[in-house]
Image (tube, rainbow, N blue to C red; front, side, top):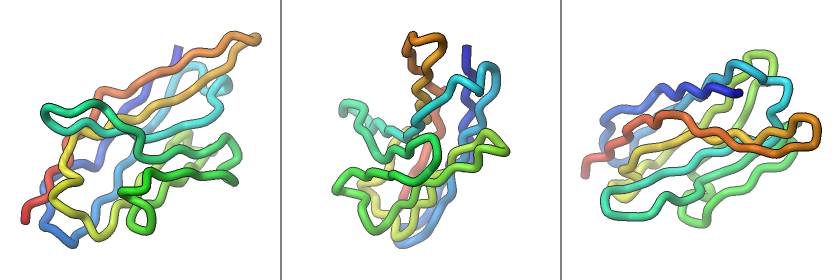
Amino acid sequence: QVQLVESGGGLVQAGGSLRLSCAASGSIFSINDMGWYRQAPGKQRELVATITTSGTTRSYADSVKGRFTISRDNAKNTVYLQMDSLKPEDTAVYYCKAWTNLNGQGASYWGQGTQVTVSS
């Protein structure tokens, strides 16, 4: 089992920045890739960014490329999402996700989410 706790959300004006954190605990040795998703009211949850175990490969949704940066600190068991040049359309609940592999069995875990609100 892996537990994920997000933090860092809040209210910010358009053009501002926020940094989200996601701290993992439990069977952290089994964690491989990690990522961030978001869900706006009335919309489906969408992928924002992912990062591989070593941090060498990162991917982003087109809507956030050049504005958001995903990173991870494996010593702290934490993944981050630096969000710059925020827009009102970035308003959503942001969720952290971890993919694990334990003895050949894959699984995934979600955090509880953190609200990000961008005012115009």
